[in-house]
Length: 416
Ligand code: SUG
Image (cartoon, rainbow, N blue to C red):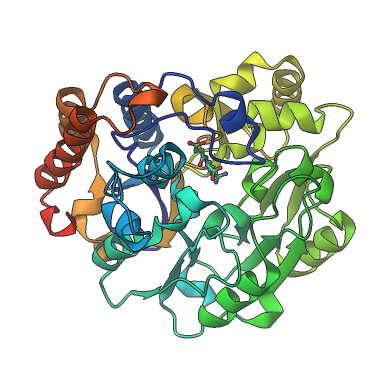
């Protein structure tokens, strides 16, 4: 079987809530204290996966981590019952749903040993995300346990790494050698730059990438300051196409020149700031779409419904498609509960180019398995979470048994 792109979506965990934990993520700050709907959020995620399957794409899943993270709280000398509310919220976040931050992935055609390399992200910048990686690593080791893969520990927390959200790959076809672009932040004005160049360089070395086909590019300070806390809020690549906002990169000209020189047929689709200002790009998540090549189909951009509701963004999309640009088709999905925490369609998935037969089948889904997952969600996920009940004993019991029910249903109780 040739190598294809598989999208692994993070299932929205039963503790999904709005605690406003992510400085620099405007949606997270704006929605702090709102009432969340974990059941609806997780079902929105399932519907997004169904839409991917309907396009003929290959689909996988990642599981929610244990929440509250009792082990992390114990390392901090406390418990969920006794922790200060702010710390308790950090232990309750369902942020592992944003699988684009799970790991950085370098497919086999790009690496010296021909294996697909994955490095789990340390996510050290935000406390609520810094404790995701042990549970993520445990499942990566099961899902990608075959010889076709090399799974790496996180790089040391001295250097911030946020995974594939700051990494893009350009290649004439998925199974051919590509160029990998690592995007890092230097400064974000009032907001933190989460990805460091030291982390990106370490990953490129660990993944045994060819330095001739590896690019390091800085994010523009303006983009981070406008709320692009990850590069995937302002840029996305697929095969030979790079789709980005005019202000995404510190030195756009140098990046485009390198891509043009190294990627056969390279096409840059740029959205000028005068058509779509950075603020509209950030609020609509236009670039946080999934840019995909369905089998035998046309290059398709899967955008959140917020993109259709933004006049400048929708006008740009309609004009691009009418003008025969490289993006031939647009699909709209509803992931509002995740969007309200700053997570769009692209945040919810990790792309892995691989032969699906080399992946543990328990992490792959079809419509029937999604029915099954949706059924567990309907039966076990809380309907609502109010911000002031994150330490409620009853809610915690409910959340812990919901995750256990899912893992058992998927025959993955070993990860409990
Ligand atoms: O890290 N939101 C996530 C959103 C991650 C989006 N991922 C990508 N762009 N790939 C973050 O900021 C909000 C949690 C809260 O406030 O409770 C949060 O963590």
